[in-house]
Amino acid sequence: MPPPAPSLPHRALQGCGRLGAAPRKFLQGLGSAAWLAGLAFRQLLRLRMDQVGVVAEQTLLQVRFTALQALPLTLLAALLLGGITLLQVFGQLSSFGAEAYLSQLLARLVIRELGPLLVGIIVIARSGTAIAAEMASIQLSGEVDALSATGVDPVQFLLVPRVLGGMISVFTLVVFFDAAALLGGFAVAALRVELSLPFFLEALGQALGGRELAITAAKALLFGALVPLLCAGFGLRVGRSSTEIPQAVTRAAVISLVSVLLASAFLSVALYG
Image (cartoon, rainbow, N blue to C red; front, side, top):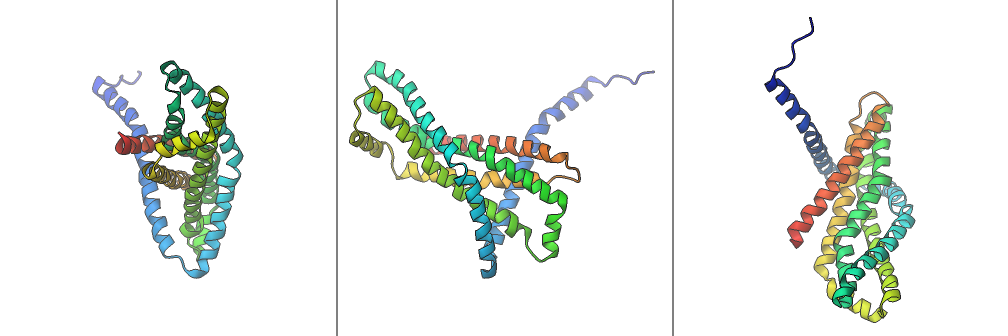
């Protein structure tokens, strides 16, 4: 005889369990990232002078991969975004005779929101997935245990350089992204309306202040630390099978993207709302 069908309360509990699986995994990822952040910070403070050179060398390698090699893509995206955004805004403002506010609106939109957010997405797609795959391969090959056996702290050698490199890289890319996006917007605006460079720069000075720049820098540093922490955490949690590597990379990319979006929205509402 076939087994009896599950009762309605049992099916309801199973449905609730499936609904809660995704938030539980997301919170587990955030908890792992917070634990790794505390561990990395403690190990950073414990660095000896003979270890600083090794950590600095690894950090420079991360900056080269995350920032320098991603700079052409970032500049291209920024130029296109600045031009397209201004075209869309111009179509709305021109009907009200408010073309003078183009540069101010573009500056606030790019500096406050689009710059850190899109750079974070680029870093997730390029470097975050690479970090997750690398950490998963290191975990599967037993290199973490080998480092510990030789007296090398895995956190100082593997995690600290990636976090520092991520923070430096995202901050640098945001600066270049914002400058290129504003330049692209000015180029498009100069073609559509009579807009001089001094007037554009004066409007930028009125639109941007120390508060906006500080908040943008804070977002960049937060995203730069959050992405490698999350991706490294998912990579180091693989088991003993190489088939878990693509699954870890996918989870790391998705959770990192959701975390960056939520963090950006939360900071924007808290600071500007």
